Length: 70
Image (cartoon, rainbow, N blue to C red; front, side, top):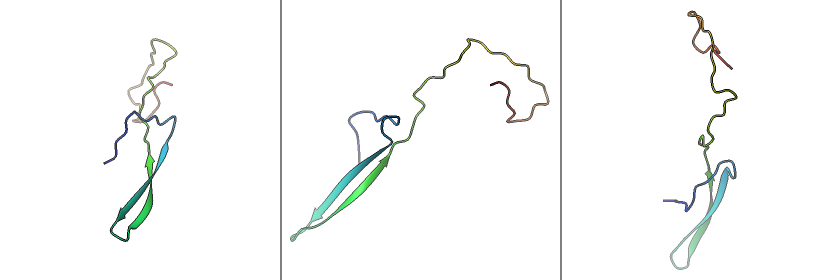
């Protein structure tokens, strides 16, 4: 289980590297592994529009995926 004490921000850092050492027995057997933690982005920025209202005329024969307004 891996947990953090604060929120991670994708825009500030996209990867973290964690070195983990495991050991057991006598004489001690040990090894070190590096864990790469990739941060995924969430949409934390609200959309920004230039106008408060937009309108467009759309024909009835428009195909799915066609651009309506840009």
